[in-house]
Amino acid sequence: MLTPDGGGSRQAGARRDVDIDVVGVDFDMVVTVHDVHIEVDGAGMAYTGKITSAESLGLFLQQARLLSGLSQRELARRLGTTQKYIWELEAGKPSIVMDRLFAAMRATGMELTANITPPGERHG
Image (cartoon, rainbow, N blue to C red):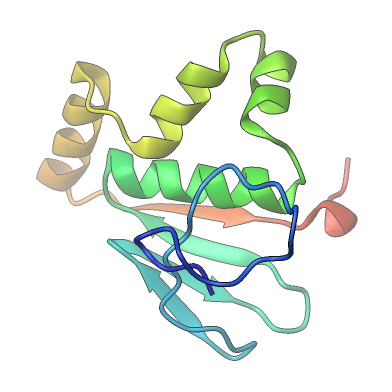
């Protein structure tokens, strides 16, 4: 488990893009990371989460990228953008568009749920 201060265990020489603060790990679990609620289906390992802010959207995007085995640089290359932009998305960097989007969602009672399907289980 990696800790918020960057410590924790990892394989020697392992490459990582970010530290992840995980509350618990169990295949019958619900993991809460900040304001992201992620439910893990033990059988298919599909991930579902409620997106309530730019930060939670960024964390969920980060998890999807990591499960896909992509670095920030590789994802940026595929999207025709920069690694810095991907980092900013994943960090939940404040922006007028995101602020207004989530304010409108709260004002209208809208909820946004995201699903991550592991690479081996994707169709199409």
